[in-house]
Image (tube, rainbow, N blue to C red; front, side, top):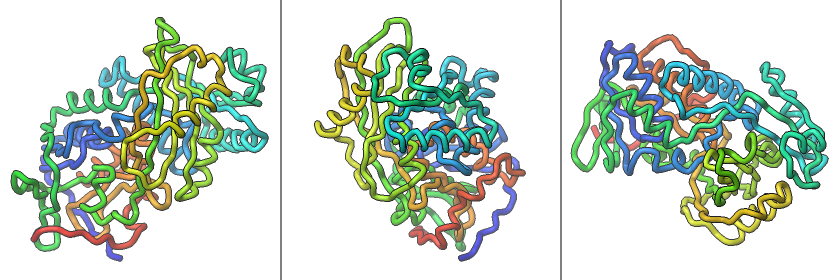
Length: 393
């Protein structure tokens, strides 16, 4: 494996960002603030992928211990800064996350998660069943215990994308798929689209599953479908619960990282509209966006057992989104290992909404040759060896 060294680019480099989800929009925001000339390319429309089909959780509570949890803490701080700066005013909202356990094994999972969170300085509040009932009236008897993580937050992905694009002012070329990379003398110098070749000093691929064929990640990126349910309104005065209810089974799936495992990981999310968002399945290898009766009914049964008050609600919509994960469960962020001029930011799975600010700033630093604001070295694409890329000379 060889590491491609990247020269420091001139003060106003031309950068192409492929993919206009929340990660691509965050990268464009930080690059334009540093003077780069950025153009975004999207095969469909902004936030048409995972960013538009997410629950909007900006949650440290739900993260896998280690670098993901640490980066989530940094990202959440950036969200708060964006609110203070007016960038995400009325879009990001602080709210607690409530973890709950239904078995003794899940109680142990929450205890381990709590210890990992405290090691990072995160505030937590362990709760008995009775204490949970005081904070979230209406919980079912199947809930044994839980934990409150007070400092989490929420921001709908498509709204963040829209606001960051406005703030960056970078042009977006919709319905412009990238067919392949343009190369010259062993360096990426742009991209080839159906409308022709676009030239740039650097190309950043942040296109989710579409990143695979462009940067040699076909065998490394793993799609996972998640089915979700939306109910009618339980309240006309805002969210019906103080924060989302997240099963310890969701944490266990992340901590174990069993590839190929299909499961449902219950989250009951109270929306600002007074509705509930109930999810979600984890179906490895599926790229369709169809929902099915078996999965939806399984989620509803679990949700009713945890929060019986949901029996008063009607299901008004079901939908599915595709999360893009990786073989080792970590995102891929950094320079391509063999091609100068090419950068990658993909494989966030369900953590893209939370991590986007950190990934965006880290990638902008990298492209511009600036000192790194965040240590994302563990996410470097080079950990998978040389990546085969087909391009045009």
